Image 1 (cartoon, helix red, strand yellow):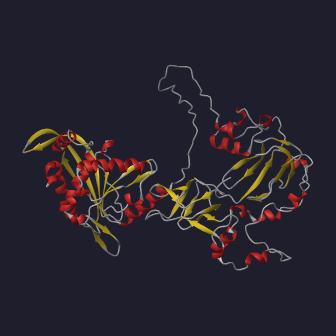
Image 2: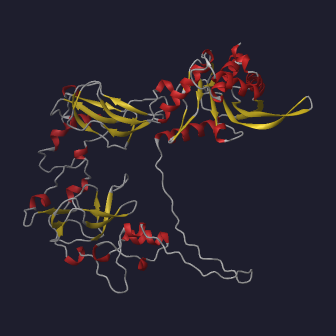
Image 3: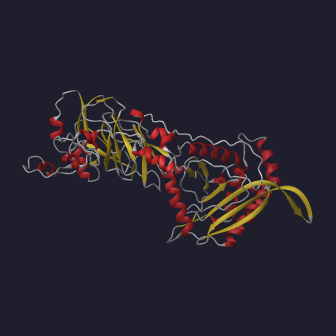
Length: 525
């Protein structure tokens, strides 16, 4: 009932032995480590046996009850666990367990263990977004088994073996560490359980049963009063424990709710859909002396958001950058009048529409060529100076931020850069970037100008030593030679890692960038 649950407590049985059960009926209320939840039946039949009394604790996968046909013989189910336990159990006779400790040569087992590959340089774990194959399917080398969400993109997991998909270690939506077992592919009837035990990491799902299941006693005579829902009185509202807890947290009076459960019982759904009546007051002449503050009715609500792999990596890498790299910031205001005019002229002949971001990117690449000392990486024990210029462009996507890379940007035309950036951005949002397309940048830019942000400071993307934050273009009064004229300006802020780049080096780079943007024809030189 939760990802961390190992056992539950039967808070109350809502059905008793002998009752007719229909799929969807609520059998009991179970208290987990997260909440009290309703235990729903997925079968039709008679409740033949209740194996756990109220207030008792039961392990995950242990027997709680048995539903079947009337007068059906269930003694064999009660006296012997229906599933094996996850750990070896000492056997008095020694008939079965010694066979499991016999040394086995894994090469004799015609099956291969598939492990989580490292799909990016920062990947520590991946999430199985969805399985495209199921256990029992025939798999050929090159087939796509599943989609894996990494910290950078959603990628396809390819099989390099032929055989039958014998086992999947995790369900869709679950995380697996790099080198953790994902699946096993092999010949039909191969002994993959032994192979898993030899790997000493996971056990087959079919055998994942808490040992407490083996300790389920023989039929227990349980007084009917212990499994019958508590009777109500005229002074008590009939409601599930979860509904009571939710109503208490939201400040809702249970006596004002109508229950939709059995016998008018209030359940979780009734509390969630409850809408308090709004108190209406007759209009009166209000003066400071007779003003009465109206009663405000509201419900406090919060939602826990499960962190995606991308969000975890963003938090880890940028925290490490901010708290370990000594940032300093240089801001410069640039006259964009000539750049605006040049863009209009370029777009009259360009095969693709050129944006201001494309012009800035090309200008940054040209300025780096003049000042290569900003094109460096800090690697703790050494500093790396790059001869090539790869510009990373920060792209916002629903899950966070990804930085696709325009490689050899100084050697590409504006039309080429424009087309490439658009393609990279579209595939970044769709999580279809290849690893080599979001790694290897030597300098980064981040543009929030399209949102009207005038200026901001960006956090350095390690191991880069610099990142340029680009603001919006706005109308401004430009003073030149004592004369005020209307114009357009843009502010840029360079964040530098002071371990690798000094203030004078960063300032010289910005001065050259300003010259290129204020007279774009210089980019061609």
